[in-house]
Length: 320
Image 1 (tube, rainbow, N blue to C red):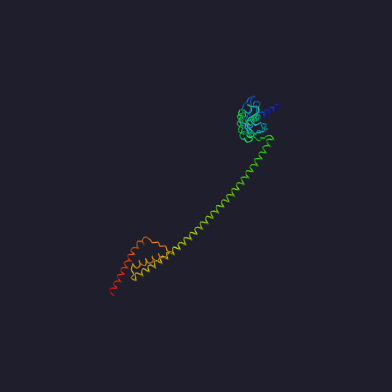
Image 2 (cartoon, rainbow, N blue to C red):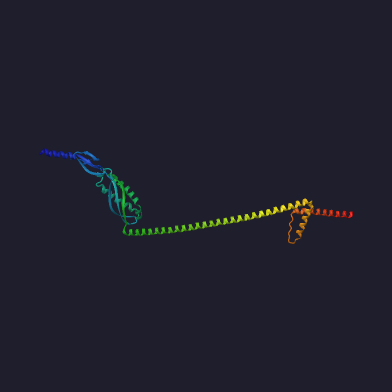
């Protein structure tokens, strides 16, 4: 019987001497009531009845959900805020021996500093400054918990609940803001529509004016072409008339030369033509300078002809 009891004691002792630490946990071991060491994940041999596992500490990321807290803002509005804390135990020894309950330490540190941070802000700043509050809380609480081996990973505000009357006023304000935006959008739409219509009318008028301008230009070009053609026709007609008259004059001169009539006769004919033109009361005679200078020679020729005629008559009379 003794050996049976002794065997049972030996088996229990052997079992107690082996400690298996699972992944994600560490064991804080004391020997004779004092801290001995921290057992990492794996198999470990301890001395039964001498070594004592003081605590099993999780090294995984953990979450603390803090209950809603009543906080007064800078403009004396009583609001309710609740937070979520994400943390991890970095030093199991400090977490066990430097504070009695590290979870309670995290919660109360967060609550106290939420009231300090939010209390220095107005309601509007709180509602629009969640990121700012989260960053300030993370910095402050992480410094506090660092002394007992806790790393604060994140501080998040879940809800900010203002009083009922404030919520009602905010809803009315939001409704008015939505109505304002709707009216602005409607007015903007009408303005854009009016601008588009005016732009279309402007383009239409511009195109119409350009069309009229093009038509006027083409009409003017047509008239100019017609006038040019008419002028060219007249010029050709005048040239043909002048050519015909020139040919007629040449024929007359040739006939005169062939008949033996000299230039004196031609000059006299010109004088006779000028005399007849001057006798007409409705005729206006314009004589170039060259013609005026030649009148003297014509008169001299006329006198010579008269003298020749008189001498011929005297000779004829003497012969008779």
